[in-house]
Amino acid sequence: MSLSRVKDLRLPLMNLVRLKGTPILEQLHLEERLLRTSSDNWCIVNDGTNVPTIVMGMSGKPCQLIEVRPVMEDRIPVIKRFTGGGTVIVDKSTLFVSLICNKDDVPNVQPYPRSVMAWSGSLYGEVFKGVNGFQLRENDYVFGDRKFGGNAQSIIKSRWIHHTSFLWDYDVRNMAYLKLPSRVPQYRLERDHTEFVCRMKDYIERSDFIEKTVKAVGNQFTLKQVNLEDIDSYAKGGYLKTTRLLTMEELEEAMAGTTQNA
Image 1 (cartoon, rainbow, N blue to C red):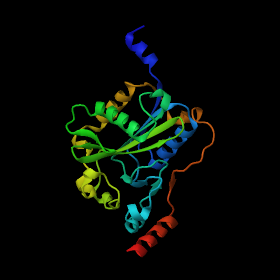
Image 2 (spheres, rainbow, N blue to C red; image 1 turned 90 degrees about the vertical axis):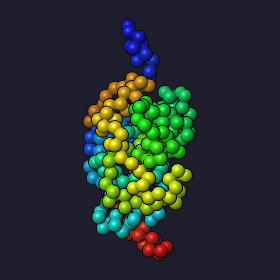
Image 3 (cartoon, rainbow, N blue to C red; image 1 turned 30 degrees about the horizontal axis):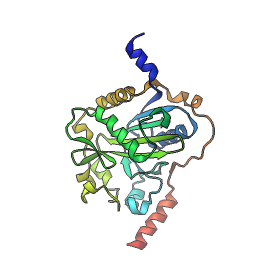
Image 4 (tube, rainbow, N blue to C red; image 1 turned 60 degrees about the vertical axis):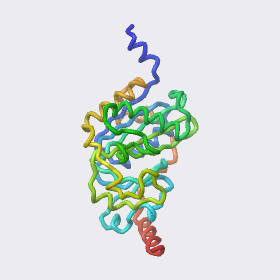
């Protein structure tokens, strides 16, 4: 038996799901289901989502985070996801990577946000090796002082998820739907969205990023590719689905609140 094969046998198993253009709501429902009803490790890679969509953290308030009137006028879907973290607008130029792990399979990582974040920063350090300026800065992935990757997490009893939206490219007009949040990273320095973020495409090819990410995960886990249609055999049992699309009524209420506070 080869040394590489012996090494593979020692690594924990991780199921790999590769998606392309899957709606972000569908992806988030899949992640929440796998976190809560599966006992396996999962890596989900989604190459873009089909339509521009705003995604907020579980405790996010629309009146504080988005420009509600233009969002409603332009019929931009708004999702409240099951994890914490900030607000993003995603589209076909956003790349998504989600890692769902059993804490016992990553024994050097404590089930706390900072420890998970440090581990993920090291993982992506492999992906961006040789790319000038990459670092984990506060809770963001940046090139220099400009953000290109935003993270969110959820930690439950014996498992956790760390998921990231990467701005391979973005439409400047879409950034106008987002307000400057009251709590921002210190390094942001009151910069608006277009001065604060950058495009990953200026640093790495889209396909290279995906393949290098899969390879970096494969250095720590034995990867097994799983098709979307086979998920039912891995995720069994019920759970309370908390990721959801905000209703028009909720957005109208948020807009009324914004008007009253103006």
